[in-house]
View 1: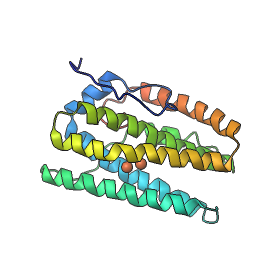
View 2: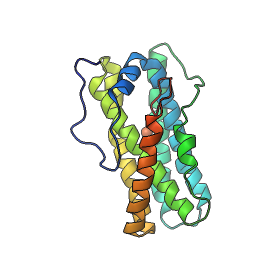
View 3: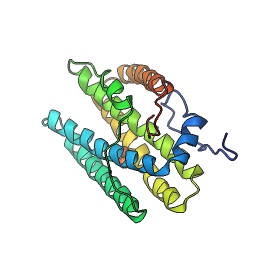
View 4: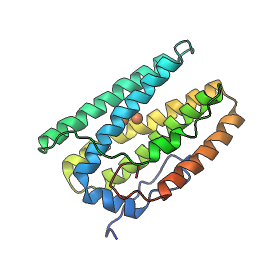
Length: 202
Ligand SMILES: [Fe+2]
Ligand SMILES: [Fe+2]
């Protein structure tokens, strides 16, 4: 048990569950592995934004919002690489948790549902990242980790908002809310199945 376990005063309300104290405890005990995994998350988040731009090249107003996300995620990625180097470490391959692949299975194959699910899942991953980076920012003792997480977490909340707005602009409010609730429950269910290694989304 963590002695002074701190939770952020507010979270993105669309997450169905809060992260467990045991997740945080494991993450804080393995800061370098979490940092390396976090670098991979940023790289993948940039990839998701770019992939959506490629998949829907003619969709109005999509590239305008996704291109800045991709750029920002790569800036986050580079920031983590710098800290890793400062600490005497470097990027390496890590076994990923099932989180991303399990969520990807929920994307329906036919359009326009494929697009809606892709936006909502990308948004949920951003929301969960925001929640977990907030926990790390509040509870990390090492100053350089704390500063890094504080500097990144606001962007992830904003990215959630962008994906959420994209979904709401292109689909009805009812349909968007209903599907987000379903996906959010699945997202929490995936995280409740323990993955033994310390990861941002384990
Ligand atoms: Fe990011
Ligand atoms: Fe993000």
